Image 1 (cartoon, rainbow, N blue to C red):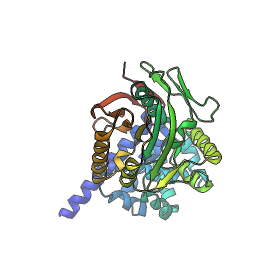
Image 2: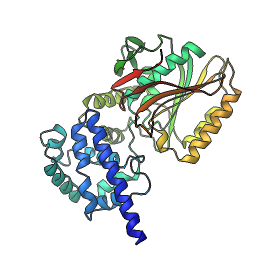
Image 3: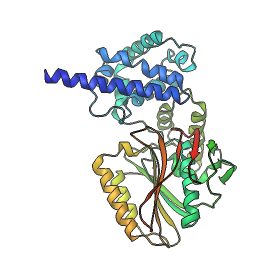
Image 4: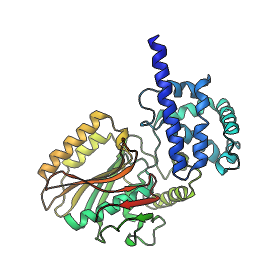
Amino acid sequence: MAGHEEIAMDEANVLRALEWQAGHAERNSAPCTGRLIRGFIPLLHGDTQVGQRMRHWPGLSLEDAMPLRLAGGFHYLHLTGRDSRLGPIYSGALSDQAEIDRTVQAIVRDHDGELAGWFAGPPQTNEAGRSAGIMAQLMWLSSRLGPRFELNEIGSSAGINTMMERFGFNLGGVRAGDAASPMQICPEWRGPPPPAAQVEIVAIAGCDVQPIDLTDPQAALRLKSYVWPDTPFRLQRIDAAIALARHKPPKVARMDATDWVEQRLAAPQPEGVTRVLFHSIVWQYVPPEGRARIEAAMAAAGAAASPSRPLAWVTVETNRATFRHELRCRHWPGGASETLLGEAHAHGAWVEWLEK
């Protein structure tokens, strides 16, 4: 009996995750993706590999981004031209949910094993639009700690945001970066603009347990699969990132985040440069013991920070209580108090700056 109760709890957790993720897509200008994800719900009661993996998902399926893993597999079938039935769903020509449900079930039957394979790892996008929130926080820090920064990113995926020193930015009328870059970040800005302070990125690197090579066409296509097809501005940014990587590939180490952070913090730090740990929509994927190690390492490095060698921790992460994406910053010396600087759209469509 206990086993049946456990399965029922797993199904309820997965159902909540699917419904929330579908609604989240719809609220973020991706109604076609939302309807596709709702089409996954009937799969819970089928006998496919996909349905069984979903039904018995271990742990927190929403934190694991389980629905988005499968959505990536569907988009890959569409991008590779392997299933024409997805075109009407992604274009919005097919919007009847019952018909979408039947289409999704048919596609799963025809590609069951391949689609089940997409559950193996979390989505990897490292959305370039989130760099707006990172750059705005660097401007805020520049006015306090100085303009020179060494940036270190965990969960870098393909390293898109480890190329942000080559992006162009327009943040509420405050411009930064390369005005001629193919990657122009110009979100809708709400609230006052960030400080118009100089930002000089003297070094930037990242790590990921499974980095994606943007210079590999197949790897880049897989990355693109995780982008929602009804958000063309995001697909354009992926193409811009690929162009930048072909000119100069990003530096992303294949390494566990906790080990890499400890290694980076132990490296010599140039005088007059603020060392920054940054990440965006990554923290939920770091195991609790890893988070504790990173927090301890940053606290120890913060205690050793000095005015000539400052330390900062800059994040764009999801508040798991409100599901709002918050811009939060800590810096040392001077204590490790955290400042909420703003909120942002999940994919960088808008930023609301809260700091006066």
